[in-house]
Image (cartoon, rainbow, N blue to C red; front, side, top):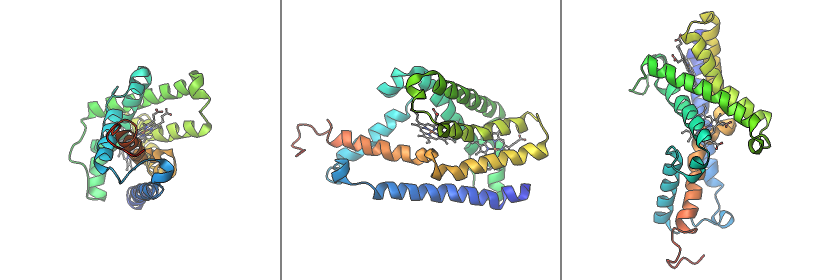
Length: 226
Ligand code: HEM
Ligand code: HEM
């Protein structure tokens, strides 16, 4: 079971995730239409690229945009959750070893155990609060469906099972495969669900940033026909 999960299972899940994201990215670009979107993508590339980079940068920066500053508690939850969900799978020592051994590629930085624990607890605790936020705030509750809880559960499951293995809270011959299955299910789900935001966040922010960089302010008063 372990050999299957860390052999073909690992290749398949990483492959589906990466190829799937590539397809989603290509589909996104192919779906762009300057007339329908009313964004002069190719006409003013310099202003467009500047606007796109600016938008991505400030949205990635903690409290970098007015919307982040308007909701500091949400921003804190969001960044605690995301720093963990991005760094732990990529840089955990145990993952580094498996990736190196099975795929022959890993990132050269690894997290020390203490930092990995802190980041993992951060994910689990902030996921609980992200759920509570969806229940407590009427403006978020009205937009929430079971699908949103499912995605939060799918994203936190590898952390719950990973921590059970880490603290040896259960039978390893059950919890380690359970951990790997939950991790691989997450990877496979990425291109097919709203988890595709891992890539599409950058694409849609670039698109909106281009719109602001070119038309809405960026080139205002500089002879732009629109
Ligand atoms: C896809 C294949 C994966 C494999 C083969 C794998 C394997 C492992 C192994 C061997 C451990 C060490 C368990 C121990 O200490 O006994 C571990 C821990 C962990 N993994 Fe994974 N994992 C995978 C995916 C993921 C994913 C996708 C995530 C998160 C999104 C994740 C999060 C964690 C966490 C949070 C821990 C415990 C961290 C800590 O030590 O503080 N894993 N994993
Ligand atoms: C570079 C990578 C990523 C970026 C830029 C990113 C960005 C975002 C953004 C902008 C949101 C919306 C926040 C809002 O509601 O205002 C979000 C939500 C979310 N992201 Fe990510 N994300 C990334 C990676 C990930 C990964 C790797 C996972 C899980 C494995 C993940 C899981 C989630 C979940 C579950 C939500 C919904 C949270 C909720 O229910 O409130 N993200 N992300």
